[in-house]
Length: 400
Image: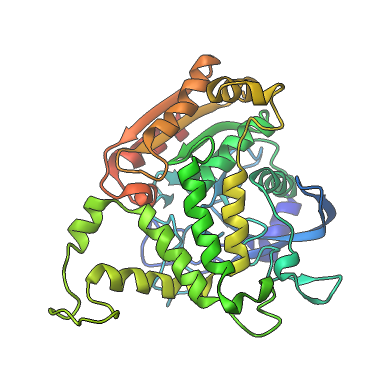
């Protein structure tokens, strides 16, 4: 371990100071805010005069820095992918069942880096951060960011650690878009790319769902044109509705039937507009919880980044005159890593045929790609579950 890396551990990356009772857990982790002082020019042409990334790491970086894996989060995700923040913490990181000693992403072998993207609200620079020009929260003045911008900042984070090539870049849903973008923008900086429950670009239906969610927020009287923090307000109702709409699309009709059916909350009808059914209670609870931890402007930014994602646009010449397959094939022509693409049978938000579009484009380029469609009942959220075949597929790919 080099002196510089040791110093970074001392600055807050040491995760071994406390032990958790589960021997396979990464244990107690301490997030670290990494500051970048240089000007960041975004895809929109706007700039940030420096930015912060909130980061967690698990495992140890080896001497030649060849064992690093980057984890890219989904829409409402954060840097806290595994472990616990203290011994009393009851809730593990969002992908804890996949990251740890002997788990699919084995921290006894790999150095795992998980970060929160700019524009989000879990410590990285975003709408709730202080705008140096006004000395107040950015609010609606925070610029629109894209998946390409996130990958650019992630490459800067790799440089910070001295990592010239990732063993793998891994992501589910929106995280899969980032992994795909990595393979296109930095083809020589990753050996393996794992794209889970994702898509080469959103369908019109998906854009429509995002727009309904955004309008729920924008039409909330407490949104205050995006400067609600300045007025000590929160567009709570809008956030609740946005989360309820989104959450419905993450599940399946069958999963909701099994979990809730048409069960009544109190056993009888109320004949009013309060909660009658268990599923109504569940959605309201999910929305309420989400509204207490996520920022409305960040939700707008994240969904817009999803809408804008198209790996061929701006990369492929004569893009407008090509079929989706030909454009994607050309966009992936210069990739050099191995790919694993995973889809789930019941995912109707990003259905298997969207993953297969990526696979077909890679095959057209004679690129090394493995594909598995996992039979799972959980819909789009399946990528978060510890499904044995899914776990084994990721484990095998990372090790071989």
